[in-house]
Amino acid sequence: MEQGGAVGAKHLSGRSLCAGDAWGRALWVGREIWTSPTERIEGGAVARELNTFRHARLCALTEGKNAREALLAEGFGSADRALALVDQHIHALCDAVWVTDVESLVMTEHLSVRSAIHKVLVDAQRVAHLVRDPQPRRRARRLAGVGRCVLAGLDDRRAATALHSPGTGTVLLGGDDLILADLLPAGPVCPVAVVCGVGLLNESLLSWLRARDIPAVELESGVPAALQNGDWLRVTALEPGQAGRVGSDPGLADSLPV
Image 1 (cartoon, one colour):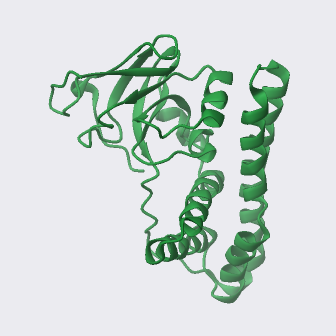
Image 2: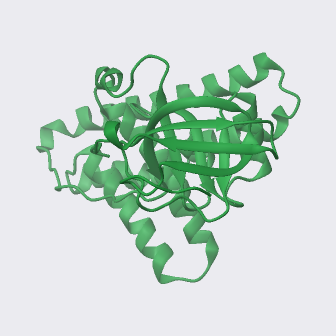
């Protein structure tokens, strides 16, 4: 692995998991910090806020179903695994427990939808850190994924066009196990490549990436922590098992508010 440049990763060499060539802005996944000022609403605005939540969740469900239809239409050879992941994501979006938790916070504590979603995610993360059972950690990750997708539906989607030039998108940086929700488009996040440590993409996720022609490179030493959200990266990956290369341009790097 070659290193250099102000961000500590002018050129990185690794192993290709999915072939392709893509250019975009870096975004760390799986490290969400669900903190924001608590927003409260007037009692008369509860119904409107609930409708806003339901609409945002419907947008996320529609994106998931569109992804499923695209897989079926392409007839990808290993689509069964990728389809199973999409179905799990759709199921998580419809999970009655987290939906009820969010709506209850809106109705009883008069929290805005955004604040209610953040509180549910923070509580799930807190439980995951307090116990050793891996199940709460998996639930927290699932909630983080679907929460990100739903929160994207609350944002002004017109702002997304300002984040990416034509032909570019988001290069996802993974330091922890990835889930499908990390790889789906959500608001301004338009994944075009994945760079991660060894073993963080299972076969089902690789099937999804290959079906969507999204290149992926794994780095034996992991992704350098010096890489920041907003760094411009080019990911070039040969056929799976062969060389993969990640190049950065510190001159184009800037921080994104994520």
